Amino acid sequence: MPQDVSIETWPSWRRDGLRYFAYSCYLKQKFGERVQKVSVDAGFTCPNVDGTVAKGGCVFCDNRSFSPSRRMPRADVRGQIDQGIRRIKLRYNADKFMAYFQPATNTYAPVERLRSLYLDALAHPQVVGMAIGTRPDCVPDEVLELLEEVAALTYLSVEYGMETMHDRTLDWMNRGHHHDAFVDAVERSRNRGFQICAHVMLGLPGETREDMLAGADELARLQVDAVKIHNLYVVKNTPLADDYLAGRVQLLERQEYVETIVDFIERLPPTCVIERVSGEAPPDYFQGPSWCLDKPAVLRAIDGEFSRRDTWQGKLWGPVPSDPAPSDTATNAAAATR
Image (cartoon, rainbow, N blue to C red; front, side, top):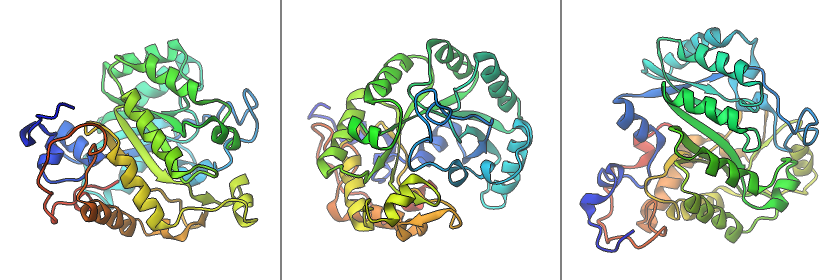
């Protein structure tokens, strides 16, 4: 970024006094009102579950803990969206929704089946966009061409599970691919009309602070459009839970995570949307760390760390102008629901 950039040229979220570009802020800018995601479960599996590249899935994974659609009887796509809207309306005042193909690998099927599922979701009158979670090794060119078709019809975010850039950690988690697969997927996804989002976890076993911040620098280099970040947490009945209970895996304490995620976001470009800064699972599935379950407190702690340092997203990404501190009353915790 040129050194002569003035405050007027900063993104609007910064001029509004926020510390980072929260997803809710981005969606309100794009749609003019609140938009909420509705989880859709199309019944997919993953190539590291069915034996294509590995067996057993990722060591941390129980899809029931990630998505409400895997914790109840599954209707068809339209029925799931209707059910999700009814649940969400009890909590949020929203009339526009995004169909979120969430659990498992949502591009892992023949193109014609994918097209039918995606178009079914888009046919819902309250759906104004779509998000698709997938693995970077499951987007052959014909799938990317389909995603480009969908992006021509609606707002589309494709979430790739990077998790980490370090191959040794990907091996530990039984991921079934290395970082080069993520780089390849991002490069082949460029200029297709959809948002490229990366999912990242902090606090993975064996990774130092420098390892984690190298991941931020890599995302900045690759110029992804958005990131979802959370700490490693443990859900029951997984290989990770076995390691955690046996003392073979240590989890980040809250303050360590708060400091690390602020370090991480400082290194990302100010145009990169921050879709998530915390993660948790339903209590019935959750093993630890306990601080994850108090999400409002985690968000307040993150915003407090930004304020304490007088820092913001992109401060360490490149040469930036001096800038007055945001108002203490205009924090991301107040502005966003993540």
